Length: 342
Ligand SMILES: [Zn+2]
Image (tube, rainbow, N blue to C red):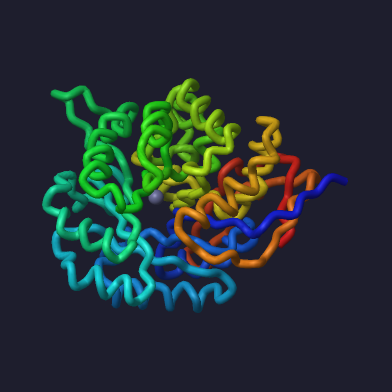
């Protein structure tokens, strides 16, 4: 039986929600093979200041003590330079930007970045990371829709990088060939996360299939090919951020489905399956456990997981009793050839 031992994964983009859903999904992260996670701040209300982030972290620690949480704040006009300093002093790692109206709970996101330049300057000084959800809002006059929203966003990334060359920036959950090409071209302070599901899906897989529907949406085969190729090149600017984003079944199997794929419960099994299929398993360790750690300047966790080449059926659903609903994982019911032993 083939097996591989890897350092425990760094999932540098995850949604852990709040309330009962938080209590349900957070303990499943470990089972998926991740030991440290970068937690997104898009709760209702948003995590906008250090105090809220530290409170949130406490709730997460209660739900699962054996996981390391890296916290972020939501980029918003109320953020001050003083708050950025306070955030850095209290171990907050990043500030997350959502352009207007592009993802769950992000209707208040802003697209004009210049108002944030004093904040970015302080972040650069404090060595905080800017995490960007890089999609333009749909716009009929400019022919912008979900299929090209990421590509149209890219000049904003270039501009911020040009003005703040030392500011570390992560373009999150990239989905397009254009994004891959730009990240490769920009300086070493700019990197990108890639999800497991975007290495697998194209538009054909989510149109009419709500459980594969997420934002940014999976794009054309040529885009998926670009993501796969950059993985196979072992480029250290591209690393794991699952963007695991659980929504209850009733909100997914709905005429107006919520965007988000839930992948954290089996994350490393999915990735082993995908990398194996692409004949590049040897690149998985750097992608899932090292490149992101280096970019974020984190100390190694000195924990390991075992990936076993053995038949593994993904559950068709998880029962969330406290909410009288279900949670449907990515590849629900599918038989794959890898499992994780933590
Ligand atoms: Zn996300």
